[in-house]
Image (cartoon, rainbow, N blue to C red; front, side):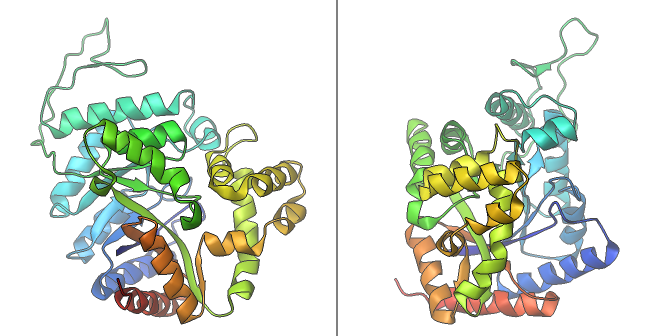
Length: 349
C-alpha cells in the first residue's frame, strides 16, 4: 500500500508563509517515500499553480490535482493544462477531476450544477480526445465542439498528444462510482470507512467489470487524519469537522458526502447531524457525532492502534492510503508522517 498526502484546501488563503511551509512539507515527504501529493482547489488556492512550483522543487513524487473542478475550466483548457503539467513535471502529473457541489459550482463559478455526472463524462471524453492527439470534435448535451452555427472548426492541440496521463475521479454517488470503474485510472475517495468499504467499492468494481477491467486496475485512494495519542481524546475535536461535512458540504438537498456516509453504515447519524446543522444548531450537530464514527474515518491512537487501522484500510482494498498527518508545525507533521510510514512498512501479510 502506497501513501499520498495533500496540500491546500478551502481554508488556504494563499499566504506566502503557509505556502512555503507546504513546500517544505512536500519536499521532505518525498524523501520519506511518499508516492503522491494532491493539491486541493475548493474555494481557496487553485489546484494547478502550487503543483507547477512543486514540480521544480521535487524529483520523484507524483503531482495530482485533487481536484480540478470541471465547472471552473472548459474541457479543452483542462486538457491543455494537464498536458503542460505533464511536460514540465517530467511525466509526474495526475489529472484529478471532480464535480464539486452546488454551492461552489453555482455560487462561485456561476455554472449550473444540473447533471454533474453527464458533465463529468463529457469532460473526460473531450480530455481523452486531446490526450490522444486527435481533433476535438464533440457533440454532447452540455459541450459541443466546435460551437454549432459559429465560425469555429475542430482543432487539434498544438501540444503533442500524451495518453499516458492518468485520470483520477473524485466521485461519491453510486452511478458516478460505477463510471469511475469504467473510465478512470484511480478513485479519490472521501466519506469512506473501511468497515463499510463495499458501499463505495462495489459500484467501482461493477463499472470496471462492465468495461472489461477489474478493481485491481484502479488505484483506490482514501484515508484520513493520522495522529498519535489517546484515540478518544484525539477524536473529540474532530467531530465539528465531521458535522460540517455532513451538514454544510453541499446544500440541504444535495450533499454527496452525507449520502455516502448514509450508505456507509451511518444513516441515522448523518440525517440527524445534517438536520441540526441546517437548522443553525451547530453545537448539537456536533454533539450527535459518535466517537466511533470519527475513529472509523481516520487513523488515531497508539502505534498499535494506527498500525491496526492501516491494516484494515489495506485489507479493505485500499491501494494508496491518503494521510493528513497532525502536528502544530511542519516538523511535527513530518514526525507524524514518518512514524506512520514506519508502521506501514512494518505491516505483515
